[in-house]
Image (cartoon, rainbow, N blue to C red):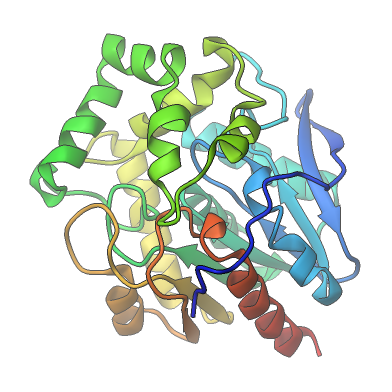
Length: 307
């Protein structure tokens, strides 16, 4: 269970590495060797979020936490930053590093991206770990489309509509940077302090560098729009239900944003070959609430897989 006495260092001691993918540099951290363990982040963060977890897992494998294209220290080319753009660069990153028989560790939008990769490359995925608060909500990993706006609580629905408004959304997310400066600090129950927020802001110094942060809310399928994303989410939903590779769900107790069936209950009722580990009451960015607990659970599970 999560322990609020856990020390959460803000400093970053991992060394940056870069590789070229589709003509742009992608940034990553790497620790350990042999069994590849690939860590996916979501919005609006970057691989910094895994800084306190990777060192706890490195004795079980080759831990790699990378930055999605347009995010973190990866390059920010002039593209639309659709889900499909990100998926293309994820695939290119894995191919360029020649990563085989992967264990995927997924959070936030990284859940949908990682599952989409596994759907297309099942032979290259050994196992999947999902890290989430535990409630089906706006920011808990998109695994089912939202049929109606009222599936969200009114505050979340209004916020998402504002983010998707062509003028207002850019102003809020790119120019005013409210996702990092106002929403992210609330994303852990213990809070995310100024020192951490400074690190999260480090790669996003100008509105143009925040284009990917702005683009992600446009990708959430609500009432059938965008249609291509509704199809993607339905496909990954089917995949996670039917895939037989080992899975782990490290989750908090349901207290996240949104309405509907808690993710934990849905996973228990629908997903094959999965283990569950509760870390107690946490926020959405549970890596900032209980990294030692998450790292320990991941380490034990991976050791069982690779021994």
